[in-house]
Image 1 (cartoon, helix red, strand yellow):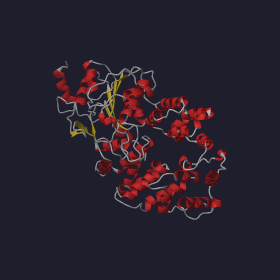
Image 2 (cartoon, helix red, strand yellow):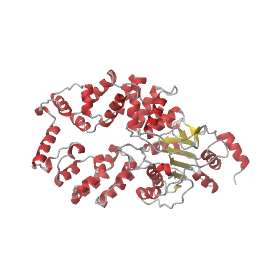
Image 3 (cartoon, rainbow, N blue to C red):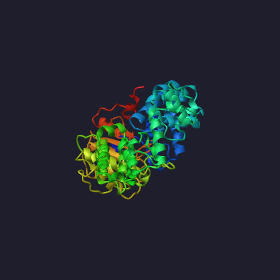
Image 4 (cartoon, one colour):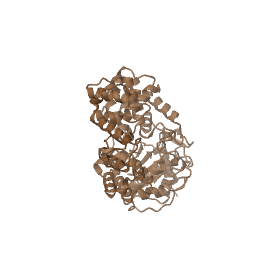
Length: 527
C-alpha cells in the first residue's frame, strides 16, 4: 500500500491540477500555445485522424499562429524544425504561407530551406491559392520567391520537379512566369507547359526521354538507353522486362523502396545480379541517410512486400531499419518503454486522406519505437498497454521488425495511460527513464485528486526514483498532455514520428536539453 500521507504531500507539492479535457473526454493538461503549435507541426498532415477532422486541425493551427503568445519568429522556427528535422511536408508549407501575412520578410528568410523540393513548392503554391491563410493569390514577394526557386534549379532538377499535380509544376510556371536565363531553359519551360519550343535547344535528358518514348512506341527501344528521369515519367510507357531492369538499375534509393512490388511484377528479380544490386542499394548507409527515410516508411515497405520479392531484398530492408534507427539513445540505467496499443492507435499515423491514406497505423509506429529501445538498451523492458497492461514476452535479440510486429498485433482496447506506471509502482520498481508512445487520449483511468492519473502515478514513481525522467512521445496532433513538467526538468512532451525524436530523447536523458525542453530546442533554430 502507498504511504497515504506521503502521497497527499506529493499531490500538493508536485502535481498540478488538470486544466483541460482531451478529445476522448479524459482529464488532461493544456499545452502552451507554442508547445501545441510544435506538436501539430511535428505530427500533423492535414488529414482526418481518429479524433479530429482535417478542417479542425487546420483551423487550430491557424488560430495558434494568430495567438498573441506566438511571435512570427517562432512560426518560422517551427517551419524550419518540422521540415529539416521532422521531414514533414504539409505543415512546414502551411506555416511558411502564414508568414506571408504575419511577416513577409521572415517568409523570405526561411523559404529556400523549407521549400526545398518540387513537392514542397507545389504544396506552398496550393496553400497560398486556397485562401486559407487570408489571400487567394501569391502576391509580389511570394511570386518572386517562386521565380527565384525555379532560377536556382538546374534543368534536370526542374524536370524532376515536374512530376506531380494539383498544382503541377507546369501550373506554377504559368502562374509566376519565371524568366528563362538560357535558350535551354526557355525550351524546357515551353516543353513543360505545352507551348511552342525549340526542340534542338531542349536539355539532353529531355531529348533522351523523347527518343526513348519514340523507340518504345515503335517497338525498337534499346533497354540500355532508358533515361534517368523520374520513375513516374516511365511507368505510363509500354516497357519490356529489359526496360524495367534498366529502370531498377538506375533507380534512386527512395524510388527503389517504394517500388519493390512493381519490380517483382515486371520480372526484375528474375536476374540474380539485379537482386544483389537492389539489396546492396537498400542497405547502403550513405544513401539511407541522404534519403531522409522515416523508420515507419521502412516498416511499410517491409510489411507490404509481396511474396515474390526475394528474401535477400526483404532482409536488406531490415538492415536498412537497423541503420535508420542508429541514433536511438543508449540510456544509462533502467529503461521502460510503454507503447499504447488501444483502439484509437489503430488509425493511420498520418491520418485519412482520400487516395493517399497510409497503411501504417499509430500502433505500428509505437511498437516500432518500443522495439528500437529494446535493441539499443538490452536491459530495457517493454510494457504495452490499453485499458490495462498487456503481458508480452519479447526477445531483445530479435530484429526490430519482428518485435514491432508482435506488439502491433495485440488486439485493441480502451486507453489507460497510467496503467504501466501503476504496475511499476505496485512492483516498487526502480528505473531511470520511462518512455510513453501514445496519442495521449487517456480516458479510462481516474485520479484520486484533480490531477491526471498518469501524473499521480508518476509522482509515486518519482518519490521512489528521484532522478528518473519521463518522456511522452505523442504521435497525433492535439493540444493536451497526460503529464507535465513541474519545474524539476523530469517530464518531456515531444511530438513526431521521425528518428529525430530519438536524438531529442538522448539529450533529455543526459541532461543537455535546453531548459525549456522541446520548445526551447525549436527556439534555438537559427533564422
